[in-house]
Image (cartoon, rainbow, N blue to C red; front, side, top):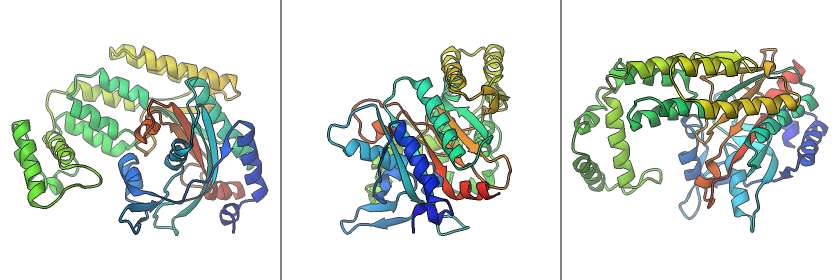
Length: 383
């Protein structure tokens, strides 16, 4: 049975979408279903990590069933002899994630674009391509939600915050409740789960304020005594660094009320795409932040979308919106059915400019892509 049939879709529509991708220069690829688990443990978010289907090879290497296509497609590109950039790929097949309401085999197709330096145009082209693909499935007028982690990162850099807190807050971007909780703790408030953390934070509290070199040595010695040489691919030194970072976070912070106020005000911003630049510039002015560079890129993207036939007024911008995969680094988008009968996005995508380098590329590779959830699309089309 084909992926299209499993999703309850017309195979002819799948072929038409893949043909569309091909006309835009995307080569069809089929990365292996079995993938090295450590890559996904390191580079995907917590939501994906806890839903992996894990196994081991005869050589003892940890493996997983591919939980998404983006990382396998990037690995496929890097494994090619004399791979050139820019490069574009598309795919059609299952991904595997544990979930309570099914077997965890999820049919997807999608497209990835690697190496284009015309960033704004590439963003617009990939979003427009996903819209055209949905139209082939008989879905038009869907709601499009956009966000931009680049703006959030620029705001963090403009605030007087310890680097450990900047890193922690950026890691939580897109997870609204956890981010709000962290901002409250950073400002000196209590965490929503403080009671459950009291015992396990005892060791971290002991480390807080200790001489960094001495604390580092204590952690490495404890790991050595326990016979632990590595956890999840991390060395004892890296684990020690993580403990020290957690110790700093565990104690909360004081004197960052202004930073917390700024972040809360930013994350509350919402507007349609046409009004979003003004809303963001007003915010930048009111809080004295220099956001000219990321705002210029934001506006260039909207102009490229407009030129490509997608009215910015159709887009819904939410400052808090981010996608729950750690490798996303900038512009993100989701497309939802307007009927409300299908939970979750029909399409999810975004920019991941650091991923290919983290996977082994010798230079930075700008990249953007999207995935389409065929089971949701089928339900939405029927509804």
